[in-house]
Length: 328
Image (cartoon, rainbow, N blue to C red; front, side, top):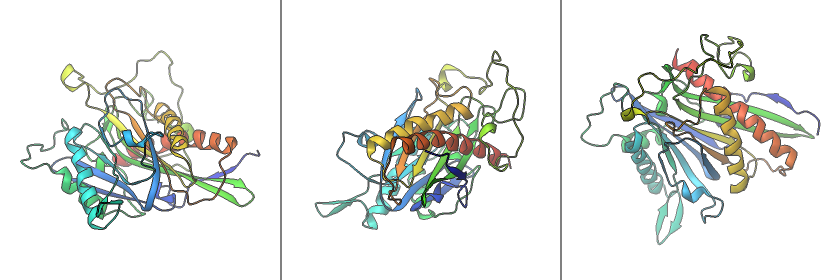
């Protein structure tokens, strides 16, 4: 197979994958928020978890051997376990719109969710009523093809190592020849234990994969293979789970749940290329994979290899863009 031609999508966002929409809602006093990924039709999804401290909802049903074949939305939220309530808000509003599986006269939206820990970031967490339900509703209501990066949505109060974290996104169009073109997109809420920067520099670990200066064009640096990695400070037993990067990798190809899970697995390579260290015991690192089936292209082993490789590099770019835009 000849080398494909590559370019970013028109917006360099997850929503360059046709059919997908993203919405954010956040509270500046809470220093937290919610991001929702949905589409104009149900879509195939899978998940792979590599962190040691994940928090999630309805991820078991994404396994290839489970009955549910398509879902209606995904939720990424701050708030630790409290943030899972955002998915309830999304479910309720989608049900009112008569979206989801129809059974016994009811519509049941399928909305898996994942959370990151931002309870100790200095925001006002002394609520009397869980705020994430309404944040979920608001994020879903805001969903569209254009959305902001940086300190918004689930990344509102995030911290990446010792730097501000946030929401990042990137896309890549792969021209396969013979009139065939497919698009990959990534979205990441970066709240990692590890750092996105090479120690002692302002250079991103993801620099080798940067396209057209999308996260500042700072160039690369030679790293010391024996240097201690830079991580969040003051880690104690009580806050050892105060981290997590949660993300979505998406394609417009018609993947099965098994193929989507493989895409999620390989996209984790993007975490390791952009955050050092990654996949730690105190991280809840998780990636959802999404396939919208908008392109009628047969998935060959060669194309599946391209999806895995470029899915990882696109994810690495999205992570770097999160930190770059959070610092704006």
